Image 1 (cartoon, rainbow, N blue to C red):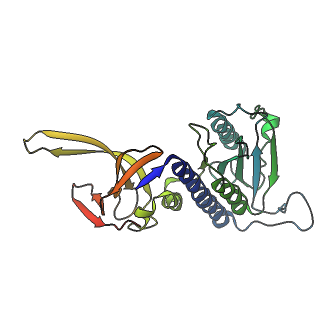
Image 2: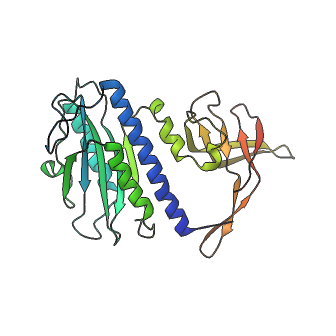
Length: 281
């Protein structure tokens, strides 16, 4: 079995779409349950929300002035500014923390730009990045989005259908914030590989983590190995580590080769080990 470099990049874009949708849906559901349903205004106003709406959602687009300007730290710096602004200006709003989802999209020629959806409680209006000097790299645009999950998912899905060849090196393709650890289960499950989803509960919060395995050799010596596994962070099986049924078999001319072991290896926190049969599709 061969995984090409192109397919690996395309897989990153597929994860982008799944993660963005799960994060946006989780945040939007949280706001609806905590503050109530949003109230939309009547008529053709640019702001689709009524003054009485318990919250609003802004869609912010960030573009670059020219090619070659992108840097991985730009989006992180902007989000940091929004977080600090929210902490100073949204006290007593009934919502703790800045809630947002962002994704990168590429133009046909490969120039990156960003889309952000940000949930704001009543009485809190986010500033434009241009007015604050938070995005000196190009231009920005902001509108209110009455269907935030649909908006950001649309952009993430557009990115998924495009070629991954133009992806910048070291680029984070998406991100989200505002959710507490216990609220991130659906997002974590959406990002899990297909072989894992078939054997775990959707609320078990799987995370890919490096773990250390210590074992005795036949000569009595101790052998320590660091490996990567999917570890469950919640539920009755919290702490269980799951290892992929696919093994790395070396490089090929266009990617990497994988072999299938026929089972998923599972390691429990108390040291027990067992296998779950897996059929390669």
